[in-house]
Image (cartoon, rainbow, N blue to C red; front, side):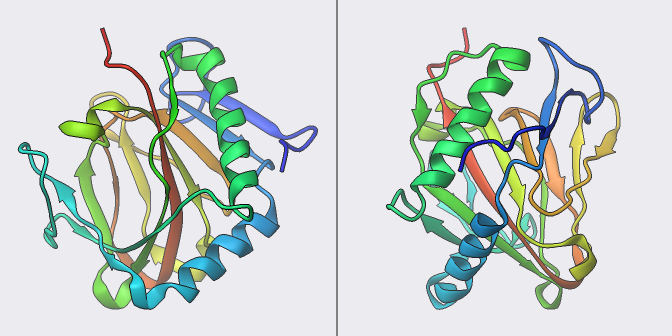
Length: 208
Protein backbone atom coordinates (compact mmCIF):
# COMPACT_ATOMS: atom_id res chain seq x y z
CA UNK A 1 0.00 0.00 0.00
CA UNK A 2 2.21 2.79 -1.22
CA UNK A 3 1.24 6.45 -1.10
CA UNK A 4 -1.11 7.19 -3.95
CA UNK A 5 0.20 9.34 -6.76
CA UNK A 6 -1.03 12.91 -6.60
CA UNK A 7 -2.19 12.59 -3.01
CA UNK A 8 -2.83 15.81 -1.14
CA UNK A 9 -0.08 16.61 1.35
CA UNK A 10 0.02 19.45 3.82
CA UNK A 11 2.24 20.31 6.73
CA UNK A 12 1.61 22.99 9.25
CA UNK A 13 -0.35 24.10 12.27
CA UNK A 14 -3.86 22.75 12.08
CA UNK A 15 -3.02 22.28 9.17
CA UNK A 16 -2.02 25.39 7.11
CA UNK A 17 1.66 26.31 6.59
CA UNK A 18 4.67 24.30 5.52
CA UNK A 19 8.23 23.48 6.47
CA UNK A 20 10.34 22.70 9.50
CA UNK A 21 8.72 23.56 12.80
CA UNK A 22 5.21 22.68 11.65
CA UNK A 23 2.89 21.37 14.36
CA UNK A 24 1.01 18.81 12.26
CA UNK A 25 1.30 17.01 8.96
CA UNK A 26 -1.86 15.88 7.21
CA UNK A 27 -2.03 13.45 4.29
CA UNK A 28 -5.19 12.82 2.27
CA UNK A 29 -5.77 10.19 -0.39
CA UNK A 30 -3.00 7.88 0.79
CA UNK A 31 -4.79 5.42 3.10
CA UNK A 32 -6.47 2.70 1.01
CA UNK A 33 -10.15 1.91 1.44
CA UNK A 34 -9.20 -1.76 1.68
CA UNK A 35 -7.09 -0.99 4.75
CA UNK A 36 -9.95 0.93 6.37
CA UNK A 37 -12.31 -1.97 5.79
CA UNK A 38 -9.79 -4.49 7.10
CA UNK A 39 -9.20 -2.52 10.32
CA UNK A 40 -12.93 -2.07 10.92
CA UNK A 41 -13.49 -5.81 10.42
CA UNK A 42 -10.66 -6.62 12.81
CA UNK A 43 -12.07 -4.32 15.49
CA UNK A 44 -15.60 -5.71 15.07
CA UNK A 45 -14.41 -9.32 15.07
CA UNK A 46 -12.40 -8.78 18.25
CA UNK A 47 -15.06 -6.68 19.98
CA UNK A 48 -15.51 -9.25 22.76
CA UNK A 49 -11.79 -9.04 23.55
CA UNK A 50 -11.76 -5.23 23.61
CA UNK A 51 -10.86 -3.54 26.85
CA UNK A 52 -11.51 -0.10 28.24
CA UNK A 53 -8.86 2.42 27.30
CA UNK A 54 -6.60 3.24 30.22
CA UNK A 55 -4.48 6.23 31.19
CA UNK A 56 -0.91 6.23 32.46
CA UNK A 57 0.12 7.23 35.97
CA UNK A 58 3.40 8.89 36.89
CA UNK A 59 4.57 5.59 38.44
CA UNK A 60 4.25 3.94 34.99
CA UNK A 61 1.12 1.98 35.95
CA UNK A 62 -2.08 2.16 33.92
CA UNK A 63 -5.64 2.41 35.15
CA UNK A 64 -9.13 2.93 33.78
CA UNK A 65 -10.34 6.46 34.49
CA UNK A 66 -13.75 6.92 32.93
CA UNK A 67 -13.83 10.60 33.82
CA UNK A 68 -10.81 10.99 31.48
CA UNK A 69 -11.34 8.37 28.78
CA UNK A 70 -14.24 6.23 27.58
CA UNK A 71 -13.37 4.04 24.64
CA UNK A 72 -12.92 0.38 23.80
CA UNK A 73 -9.54 -0.58 22.37
CA UNK A 74 -8.03 -3.57 20.63
CA UNK A 75 -4.42 -4.03 19.55
CA UNK A 76 -3.21 -5.29 16.18
CA UNK A 77 0.35 -6.52 15.90
CA UNK A 78 2.32 -6.82 12.68
CA UNK A 79 1.03 -9.75 10.62
CA UNK A 80 1.18 -10.52 6.90
CA UNK A 81 -2.22 -8.83 6.55
CA UNK A 82 -1.33 -5.72 8.56
CA UNK A 83 2.27 -5.32 7.39
CA UNK A 84 1.35 -3.07 4.41
CA UNK A 85 -0.36 -0.68 6.85
CA UNK A 86 2.75 -0.59 9.03
CA UNK A 87 4.91 0.09 5.98
CA UNK A 88 2.60 2.84 4.74
CA UNK A 89 2.64 4.60 8.12
CA UNK A 90 6.44 4.36 8.37
CA UNK A 91 6.86 5.86 4.90
CA UNK A 92 4.42 8.71 5.60
CA UNK A 93 6.05 9.52 8.93
CA UNK A 94 9.51 9.52 7.37
CA UNK A 95 8.33 12.11 4.85
CA UNK A 96 6.57 14.20 7.50
CA UNK A 97 9.59 14.04 9.79
CA UNK A 98 11.96 15.16 7.05
CA UNK A 99 9.69 18.03 6.04
CA UNK A 100 8.35 19.24 9.36
CA UNK A 101 9.60 17.72 12.60
CA UNK A 102 13.26 16.74 12.29
CA UNK A 103 13.15 14.28 15.21
CA UNK A 104 15.55 11.40 15.84
CA UNK A 105 13.40 8.30 15.29
CA UNK A 106 13.99 4.60 15.82
CA UNK A 107 10.75 3.04 14.57
CA UNK A 108 7.58 1.36 15.80
CA UNK A 109 7.78 -0.14 19.28
CA UNK A 110 4.03 -0.62 19.79
CA UNK A 111 1.23 -2.37 17.89
CA UNK A 112 -1.60 -0.56 16.14
CA UNK A 113 -4.36 0.59 18.47
CA UNK A 114 -7.98 0.62 17.30
CA UNK A 115 -10.22 2.78 19.51
CA UNK A 116 -14.02 2.78 19.36
CA UNK A 117 -16.05 5.63 20.87
CA UNK A 118 -19.78 4.96 21.29
CA UNK A 119 -22.53 7.50 21.86
CA UNK A 120 -24.37 5.12 24.20
CA UNK A 121 -21.30 5.23 26.47
CA UNK A 122 -20.63 8.95 25.97
CA UNK A 123 -17.33 7.95 24.40
CA UNK A 124 -14.59 10.56 24.60
CA UNK A 125 -10.93 11.15 25.51
CA UNK A 126 -10.19 14.28 27.52
CA UNK A 127 -7.19 16.56 27.17
CA UNK A 128 -3.97 14.54 27.20
CA UNK A 129 -0.56 14.05 25.65
CA UNK A 130 0.73 10.72 24.34
CA UNK A 131 4.04 10.82 26.17
CA UNK A 132 4.62 9.82 29.77
CA UNK A 133 6.77 7.66 32.01
CA UNK A 134 8.43 4.39 31.04
CA UNK A 135 7.98 3.27 27.45
CA UNK A 136 5.70 6.23 26.76
CA UNK A 137 8.72 8.49 27.13
CA UNK A 138 10.02 7.14 23.81
CA UNK A 139 7.01 8.30 21.81
CA UNK A 140 7.99 11.07 19.40
CA UNK A 141 5.32 11.24 16.68
CA UNK A 142 1.65 10.29 17.04
CA UNK A 143 -0.39 9.14 14.04
CA UNK A 144 -4.20 9.11 13.96
CA UNK A 145 -6.35 7.79 11.11
CA UNK A 146 -10.17 8.09 11.32
CA UNK A 147 -11.85 4.85 10.25
CA UNK A 148 -15.44 6.10 10.37
CA UNK A 149 -17.19 8.51 8.02
CA UNK A 150 -18.11 11.65 10.01
CA UNK A 151 -21.64 11.37 8.62
CA UNK A 152 -22.08 8.21 10.70
CA UNK A 153 -21.72 9.97 14.04
CA UNK A 154 -22.08 13.31 15.78
CA UNK A 155 -19.67 14.88 18.24
CA UNK A 156 -16.30 13.16 18.52
CA UNK A 157 -14.39 16.18 17.20
CA UNK A 158 -10.60 16.00 17.40
CA UNK A 159 -9.06 19.14 18.88
CA UNK A 160 -5.48 20.13 19.70
CA UNK A 161 -3.78 23.03 21.44
CA UNK A 162 -1.52 24.70 18.88
CA UNK A 163 -1.38 28.11 20.56
CA UNK A 164 -3.42 29.68 23.34
CA UNK A 165 -6.73 28.01 22.50
CA UNK A 166 -7.90 24.66 21.12
CA UNK A 167 -8.31 24.25 17.38
CA UNK A 168 -10.44 21.76 15.46
CA UNK A 169 -8.60 19.26 13.25
CA UNK A 170 -11.11 17.93 10.68
CA UNK A 171 -11.12 14.15 10.48
CA UNK A 172 -12.57 12.95 7.17
CA UNK A 173 -12.48 9.22 6.57
CA UNK A 174 -8.96 7.94 5.92
CA UNK A 175 -7.08 11.18 6.63
CA UNK A 176 -3.63 10.60 8.16
CA UNK A 177 -2.80 13.15 10.86
CA UNK A 178 0.73 13.21 12.33
CA UNK A 179 1.86 15.41 15.21
CA UNK A 180 4.46 15.48 18.02
CA UNK A 181 3.40 13.16 20.82
CA UNK A 182 3.78 15.95 23.37
CA UNK A 183 0.99 17.98 21.71
CA UNK A 184 -2.08 18.41 23.95
CA UNK A 185 -5.18 17.00 22.23
CA UNK A 186 -8.59 15.45 22.89
CA UNK A 187 -11.61 13.68 21.38
CA UNK A 188 -14.88 15.35 22.37
CA UNK A 189 -17.86 13.21 23.44
CA UNK A 190 -19.66 11.27 20.72
CA UNK A 191 -23.35 12.13 20.91
CA UNK A 192 -24.70 9.90 18.10
CA UNK A 193 -23.42 6.76 16.47
CA UNK A 194 -19.97 5.21 16.68
CA UNK A 195 -16.57 6.74 15.94
CA UNK A 196 -13.54 4.52 15.35
CA UNK A 197 -9.92 5.51 14.77
CA UNK A 198 -6.47 4.03 14.36
CA UNK A 199 -3.61 5.31 16.51
CA UNK A 200 0.07 4.47 16.33
CA UNK A 201 3.21 5.99 17.82
CA UNK A 202 6.69 6.33 16.35
CA UNK A 203 9.44 6.09 18.92
CA UNK A 204 12.91 7.51 19.24
CA UNK A 205 15.63 8.38 21.73
CA UNK A 206 14.80 10.96 24.43
CA UNK A 207 14.57 14.60 23.37
CA UNK A 208 17.77 16.51 24.14
